[in-house]
Length: 276
Image (cartoon, rainbow, N blue to C red; front, side, top):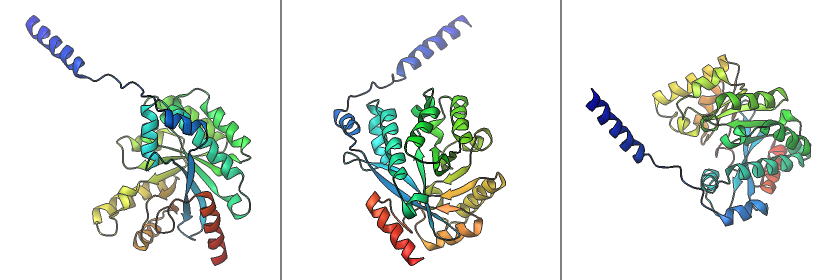
């Protein structure tokens, strides 16, 4: 027994040695300078009502010439320990941009994405509510989107921050639903208003019966829980027809519009209004 324990201990020590240490942050002067000089730009992904086809909101997405997508940008920021700083800068810019809109744009909702670093920071909820007020926005026009990765470190603490935001009127959405392993637990343990179904799950609903069953079941579950349903990545009218029949509330995707810069969005909403 003693020799066995010694052997196991040696194996454990060897295993421990094989676990890589957390990577040290790598300085990224170009990205730090871009954040500091407000060079990160925004694109807005329109969101439409399934029943009417009307644009009712936008999701704010970050853009920078050094990266091809928001995911790539935030991955780069994470390697440089700049993710939280970037996230706050993007959120502030999105809120203040939307807060300046008038006319038809003045009624649109805005969805902003939250990171794990945001929710792990004590006082984040108070900070975000102050930023919403400073932008001249009603909290009811703001949706805070979270992913599974945003809650891994401290679900209890994150839930408390989200509850604070929700009690002030901010809507809470769980993003990329169906792509992780603990999403079902979110539906009963978090203060949620909206479920966003990931684009990867609807890509083949026009041709694959199993895909249709899964998405239809997700929408049905959300409806039973009293949650609004938003579907990402809608690219053709056949997908939209199926989603409408299953009770989806909102959708976004290339069927109606790609992400738009602010001036493009202003023109788009003007054209939509003229055509109504």
